[in-house]
Length: 513
Image 1 (tube, rainbow, N blue to C red):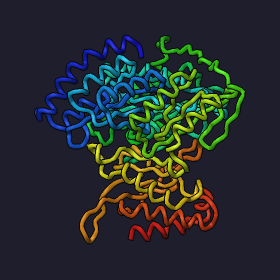
Image 2 (spheres, one colour; image 1 turned 180 degrees about the vertical axis):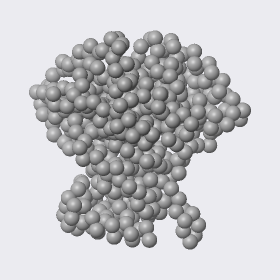
Image 3 (spheres, rainbow, N blue to C red; image 1 turned 90 degrees about the vertical axis):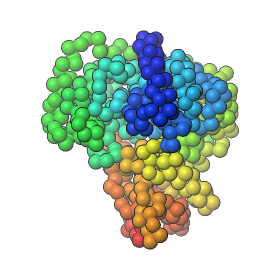
Image 4 (cartoon, rainbow, N blue to C red; image 1 turned 135 degrees about the vertical axis):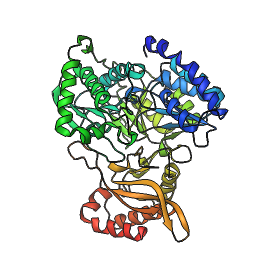
């Protein structure tokens, strides 16, 4: 992180310290503090006694130095909960107010400025997690994500946004960071260019993005980002927060009108020659050790003899002891680092076969099947706006399903959000669940509305609609019964659903009646 940003933001911590102490002395409200603290990447957790801190890392790139900082902070401040987010960042949880400001300052000085990590600011820039390493990628988008992340820091103090702005880069049609339905997304093409999408998003009234440019030179991305910032600031809704996200520009301006005003701002942006990038992506010089390794969690890289090892902790939750062991394992390994995924997992990348074998052994307690890679936001026990305990529900589902010993793929990856905000991306999962309350003869009980048939793949995107609600206590049984139906036919969910959608509908009716 540029020293200029560090020096620019450090004085802001004086006000943050003051507001945090006032919050704990009950001098300001929860809402007032949330509106302020989010701009520092921090929120008070439910109950107001503990805090969380969200660390920026563009493209989900967790280097050894960043990992070392997290490990050392856990030891120094007795941090007991760490979570990977669906925006490829790391959240530190259960922080004491007395420690919070010091942790933030330490993080900033370590190169992880959390400013704008929450609130109405440009958020962590996302990218396909194996960018630069993946055999079938169109090209390496990570350098552009990192450049975009650096550039967007310029606007944190200079511009007041209507709401948050999420930008991402996708290296293939897999569309892992959801580039075609974010506030702004750059999708790679086989010829080394980007297509540009804007004003998409999940949550209330979700929409796919609008394509505003095709086949642009990657060196020009900052012009397109500047145009998006100017469009959002000029036409975004500052009066109604419920309609302040970029996707509502499609409603207020119409798609044609949005394209028109965006291109007007783009023309203005091109008057600034300083926004032209001159990136020279670095190549990995490391070579393999001449050995091969094969495992379903191993991904051979396009660099000959190098491998990435996939690890998915349940719900994206990491323990300090695991992170410490991981750091000490990879610290002496040349060029090895971590890439966080948009589904709360991680890859340990640039391993030779011997190193990959060691990482496999250390991460053996992770997801064993596609279903166990399922996604859940942090949930209502921690999040102030959460309704359902999504994280606990996921772990209960994994526990129940694991007892059945289903073959891999019998159940799909599911997505669980604790509220309509779709932090768990429930609207694009093959199966998704959204937290709420269901009225029963015994009174209101925790429940989750079901979503089915979503898809994130570029060119095949489907944002699913909300179905009826299933009691939270019955969702593990619902999934077990679904798995038994599919397993009895010796197939997997992806194939089964094509011919048996009516059977799924009947099962949903059974559990929502």
